[in-house]
Amino acid sequence: MRSEEQEKTAIRYVENNPVKAKLRGEAEEWPFSSARFRDKYRRLILPRISQ
Image 1 (spheres, helix red, strand yellow):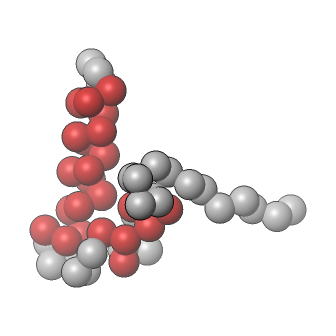
Image 2: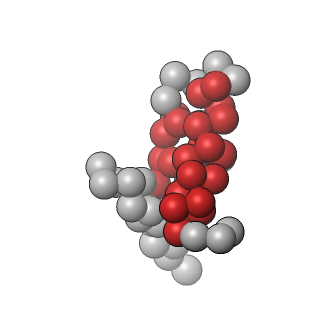
């Protein structure tokens, strides 16, 4: 990526693909998407994995 803005654009594009393909109504509903881990400010919040 050439810039942070280009990276954000690419992430939004990839996360929104299931919606464009009409596989889900919202990107957050797709189980394989990082979109479901974003907060209301679109920051990525990953769950902790207990070992």
